[in-house]
Structures are given as structure tokens and as C-alpha cells.
Length: 228
Length: 318
Image (tube, each protein chain N blue to C red):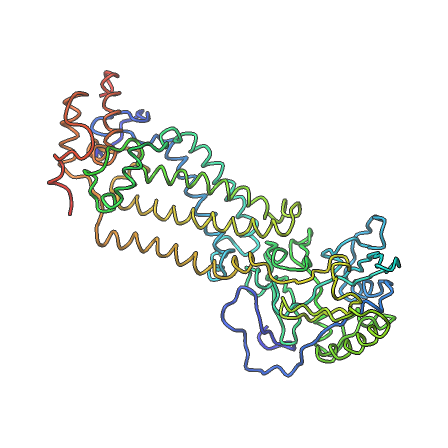
């Protein structure tokens, strides 16, 4: 891993010295806005979900403040994720190789990547997480408006409120579980955190984890003389 | 709030029991609303406003005697007027004093996420402690009778307290005090059931063969009960539910879903932890870097493509 950044190189997939730009400053900023909004929304939501976690409301000032702020954290996450999704959705379509990759999940969790099909910019796990986030956030958004007592809940019938509350909790549960896996994957696959904090990965990292992407990057670099 | 004139037996969002060594001597109380004696004078509404210092906004005439048309944060009890034409072609004016039923198994308390915002006293009264209320409105989703209202002024939930402040010092609720016909009675639940039984016998002798006491078992019984001429059709009384109970959705949401969800999230995190302990990090090896460098130098027609490049197998981790 090259430790210094070359000034001015902030182009996705650019090869800079002995490193590849995986995430631009814009990508990273967007990702971390989503991440921060997620943490805030999850903690404030869990405070209202289970009394065992009501103490989390102290992080936000008080119970009433938690209730006031939670929907805005949620909206921030949805908006930031919508922008992020626009950046990455074209790389997150499932292919035949992805399903094969998933069927070989034992090799995935066993660190036997050499037995897996070559992976593009994102692997099937990342693509599934992306799809899961889209579905859950849409569910959370719709049901969140319905149970938003201060501005919207009085437009809806009580049976609908009950259904919305349970769907909201279910979507949040799936989302939080998915993010737990996502965070662990970042810890597990070394170099990923650096990719999302500093933007760069080594060619070896790309070769090992995203070989199809590596080949694309190198092909593009070759047809763009001077950047290699 | 530990030891006070009214002992608490249930507290919202609290799993450990409230202080309980004082074996509450107080009997279970109940308000009996004899709909068959009610003349719809609304004295109880006025008494409620007066005792609790509530002043609702002057509303508009909606073409009915219902005034205000619905319960609000300022109107904790409301007379509901229904006109019913019975099978004999006679009009029956069914007037029901609506308000909190003080369920033995309160849906509001079940749904409430704020510790101590809703309590149930040993005498059965269900009371909101607004200083602990966070204003989420879950009590509205929890209530089988559509009673709690969130104030637009302070975003807290309000409803009938059964005048817990009066009852605590041995007085009857303000509405009871004001009723001119004796349609409202207050006492121990047992006495009220007895009184109701006498009333029902009388009603039956006068042709109301379906007269009965509305004390819904689906919520464990209530501390506000109605004597109805038509117990078989409670819906006639402005939609009084026939078999009210805490919605299964709410039971699931505020019941088993909580521990299951938390446990599964914990399991997800622990699975990650033990995966790390057993399998370890997936690290890029020097071999990967070499192969990448070779592939880079070789160009597009370079080293073998496709899955399972055997070259890297010897280096792969156990």
C-alpha cells in the first residue's frame, strides 16, 4: 500500500503509482454521511424499540429529543443513500457469476477466494447488501412517515399505524443486521477500511478480491497513456 | 414516586417489578356508566374540564349533539350521541360517555417505550405520567378504544385519569360528583358489578332482554364499565368495540419481537467475532502483489483468466 497520496489524483479507477483509486473523495464523503446518519438513526430508533435500550435516548438529550430527532436522522440517511445509490447502482447488478459466488459461500467465509469466480468492482455479498438497503430504506421511509406523530400520523387509521410500526421495526432489524455484517466484512477483508477512508487499494488487493475489476482498471490505464 | 398514596403495580417500559412490599389494601375501583339512565346533559364533561383545568377550543357544530365531536387532549370525556331505530320501528337515543376504560391489561402501557410514562395503580387506574412521556404516540396505536390524544401544545399524551388525584384522597371522580341522574356511579369494582346486576335485572324485566354489563374480557376486564340495553350490539353505541383486545400486531411488536430482534443482532455480531477468531482476516499477500504486478506487465493477453487460478492456491490461507 502506497502511503502517500498523489495530489490531484481523485479519479475513480485511476492508477496512481502503485495504487488504484477505488473511492474518490466524493464517494467516501457520501458513504460516511450515510454511515453517520445510520448510526444516529439506529441508536435513536433502538432506544424507542426496546426499553432495555431506552438509555440510548440519553445520547440525544432526552426521550423527547430522541423522538424529535430520529425521523430527521432517518431522512438524512435516505437522502444521502439515494445519492450514493446513484453513484454505485450500475456496478451492483447481479450476474450469473454472482450467484455462483454465493453458492460457494463456504469458500467465501473460509478465505478461499482463489476458488471463486472472478469478482468485478463489487462481489455478490456487497450487491446483496446494496439491494437490501434499497428495500429496507424504502420500507423505513414509507412507514416512517405514517408513524411520524408530529406531522403525519394523524392522517392515518390506527390499524395502519400498527402495521406501519411493525414493518418499520422489521425493516430496521434487517438493515441493522445487514450493516453489522457489512462492518465485520470491512474488518475481516484487510485493506477495505483504508479503501473507504483514504480511497486507495494496492494492485494486489484488487487482484485478490476484485480480479475482474483489476483487469478492467489495467485495461483502461493502458488505453490512457501517461496515467500508468 | 416509590411509596405514595396510590401504589403502582405496572409501569411502562419497565421489566423489573415496581416496589411491592406494601400489600395494597385498596380494593379495585371501578366507574359504572349506566347508559340507560344517561340523559346526555354533559355535566360530567363540564365537571371534568373544571376539576382538571381543561379548556378545549370552541368548536363548530357538526350537525350532532356531540360537542366536541371527539376526544382531545383537552376533552378527556365526551358524550357520544347515536340514533338507533330498533326492529319495532322506535327510535332509541343511545348516549354513551366515552373516555378511557382503564383496562386491566392496558394496550397503551404495553406499547409505551418510555419508562414510567404510563402506570397502573393497585386500585386499577391507568394513569399517564406526562413528565416521562416522549410524545411518540405509540399509546395511540396500542389502545383498543382510540382514547389517548397527543397535545399539539406540549406533544404529550393525555386521557382520563379517573381523577386519580381525587381517588387517592378518598374522593370520587369529578364526573361522578356531577351526574344528576345517577347514571355515573363509583366504588369498588365488586360493588359496581353488584349494582349493575340489579340494574340489568330491572332492564330485563322491562323488555330489554339483551341488557348487560360491558366489562370486556379481552382486555382483562376494565375499571370503567357500561350498563347497556343492547350488550349483544355494543357497536350501536357510537362504535363501542364488541370484543376489544390488544391488537396481535402490537402484542408481537412490543412482546416477543424485542428480545428476538436484539438476540439476533447480537448473534450476528458474535458470529463475526468468532469468525475472526477461527478463520481470521483475509489479507492481501505478497504473492497477490507479485501476481498483480505480473498481470499488469503482461497486458490484456497475459496470465490465465477465469476462476480458480491455481497459481495462488499454495499461498492461500488455511
